[in-house]
Image: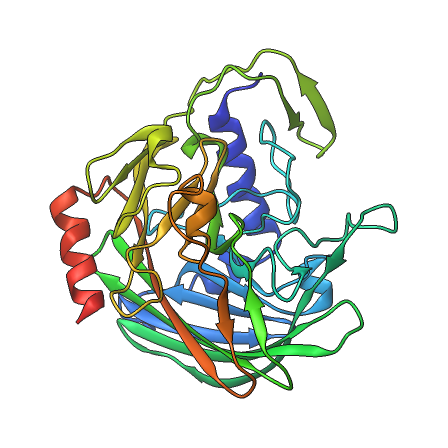
Length: 358
């Protein structure tokens, strides 16, 4: 398997080729170093910090390429290192090609009135059993650039298999910086049940998630399928873990694969991509249902917080929540994603969590 540094260089060239970095390379004489700028073009909103790429909110059909919900993709550190997997929107060499519904950072759930919003993707066809839901962007309510912070508020409908809305979503993103190396995404999502009661049956697949780059996975000896430079999938019986350095650590001091299914206030994923140490931390909020959340954090790169499946994560020790939202009622979820161009310590993540929870 080729060195993962080549994959990183290819990803950077892709960003340049497709204009994300080029369009955002505004000189510091125009933008202050930490000014956050939001720009809409077609079905995407580009977010830059000091003229450097941070992320894009993708919501248009052409931009999503079969993805069944709006997403943030890609997400980059201040050093311009992509921390999200490229597949399926822009495959990179030597990354996994499993779970095509894992795209960038997203918010959805695996069982909403019997509909699977989590697993839906362009790969779902008539041979797949069950009901699948789709989240469709309906509008941008607010878009504001500013010094050290930028704001985006968008709406969406959660549609059942017949295209009828079950839920109305309003999500407010706050993009900000904490010093030079730390970038923050604060997501506040309010879901409102429409004409009838909505039940979120206990399920491991949810709620806020990031699919991280290959380098941030845990080293594994399991056989897998990876892509080459052209995006072609190839079965690899024995994995080359060169450059794979990811490690989970939660607020209770539990590390590695043992973080899965545990409750914690936050989980911090650290590793090294190319020549840069990085951290990706997801932080729960004290006002959220089910706080502190359970974690659906897998070594293969799925990193998710899910408070709605206690009976699943506890192996039946905790009673089912089966969270129910009556018609016309709303619930709000709040999460912070910290992306750092260095490894964050427990003390630093605790400070970010405390500030978020104020």
